[in-house]
Amino acid sequence: MKVGILTIGNELISGKTPDTNSSFIARQLHAQGWQTSVIMSVPDDEDAIKTGLNHIMSLSGAVVVTGGLGPTADDITTSATARAFGLGIYTDQAALKHIRDRFEKFHLKWTANNEKQAHVPEGAETIKNPVGMAWGYSLKRDGKIIAVVPGVPSEVKRMVTEGIIPILRKEFKDAAGHVESRTIKLSGITEANVDQVLADVDFGSLGVNIGFYPNFPEIQIVLTAIASTEKDARKRTTAAHERVSERLKQYIFAYDQDTLEGIVAGVLTDKNLTLAVAESCTGGLITDRLTDVPGSSAFLERGVIAYSNNCKADLLGVPQDVLREFGAVSEKTAIFMAEGVRKLGKCNLGLSTTGIAGPAGGTAEKPVGTVFIALADGTRTFCRNYTFRWDRRRNKTMMSQAALMLLKRYLAGELEHER
Image (cartoon, rainbow, N blue to C red; front, side, top):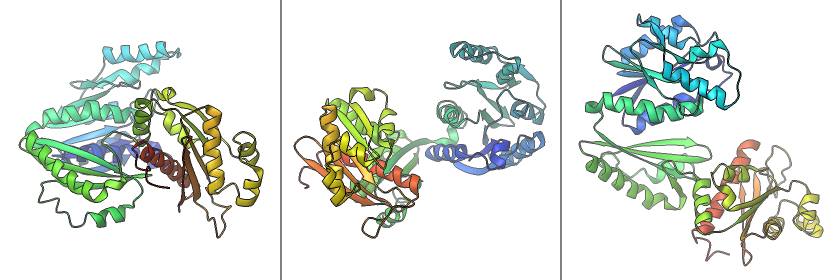
């Protein structure tokens, strides 16, 4: 089963907007055991869209198209697709009602050009959009499927997984077989090291395909098996997963759709524990990630950005002599911050970060990328020191990742015998 990807938009061709949709769609196709035959990006131009469709369809059994379904004059994907196959266009009333209802819900002013988002080529079946305005559609021509959705990444993610994948599986069920896929998420190890650790595992003999997908700050291993029965496919991925886990268990933090912050949030909620966070170098990233989890108010009492020395001293109780003697970026300061924010919030746990994100501010003893992360529970305080090598933004992201990993390990009881 080969599927091509066509992304449409002047903003993609000009480089103003990165094409994240193609990589996401390709990963979803791979997880189904299908091959991505070609990926193309074309401008909002009728001839370019037609040429792209014809080329991809000559190489594939299906094509997934994103972009150009909006209300503006340059959104011409539907008209171009219809003309490419000699089809008329109609207004889908269910899609139009969906758009009007969203306008009413969000108190938006209706303009006539918004009806364009409900236009569909004749003979196409609509694909509902659960998070946006324009619906997509699928069209079958010469035994091949053309599936079209808007280009907004958040909409693509929902519509591809909930709409397009089921359509393709139903249409090409004889070619797909039974597919079992498992995603293993790692942190604290490089892609090169992962490859070395797994070099002696013969995944081919297990009947499993393995893919490595860096998704900063984590690495994802995707195991995919295709078999004649669901039981056999699951047996193959289970055997491959066991091989991976044997070698990389200490770096595994999540599977499939789970996230690090989601797992931490779940354990905190289940154990009825409360948390306060004091961030310096991470500037609120830890708190931001935790509050991305619905229901975070059940465990997150407060987040403090204690960026200056005065704030560390005045709000969190870090002694001035500690700041003078050891510096703001030090183990002692991180410990005082964690203990201080825990007491301030009257919480079970206090988590802190203090470091040098860069690009300036480093020294020989404390280079750029240095961070101290502390976790206090009222009885013990754990502190870890890391040095990362990235740019400022990536250093901050890695620091937030390391902090959440420390918290996860604590909640799992893995720090019990560590000083």
